[in-house]
Length: 192
Image (cartoon, rainbow, N blue to C red; front, side):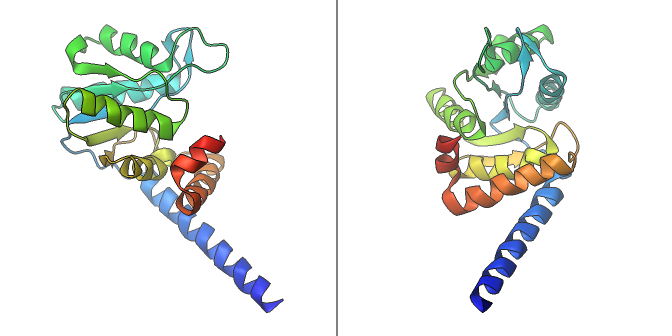
């Protein structure tokens, strides 16, 4: 009985500390010069970025305009029923904002954060670009995104496009970070 109580206290403490880390990271903007901005994918509707995705893309365009990175990598494959990948929708949207074609790289196979970032690292390598990246996602997703980027060999900082998120998002991220730390984010990606 005592050992079960100790285990429960340790698990609750671990999750509580992880929640605090996710919450603190959600409001931090670590924008700095990098080799590339990497925009994590989000929903698109028949080639038109969702409001969340558009906010990420607008933020990436601002970071690029500020001279923080010469290249933007847009990510995201197709979800069930999609005719267009998230990466292609993002590319078209950024081109419509006047971002030069030469400044854009597109990842179109990723279906989750791990696969998007692993593929982005390979794309940067193939293009001869360094792995110093400025990640653009939502605030609540910042901690997990930076941890995955480190796992795939990137030197990453996060500049969130939006605030910290609500309780549901923070709890989901707490669970994902907790499991990812214990099992590895790659293994977790393979399960989902």
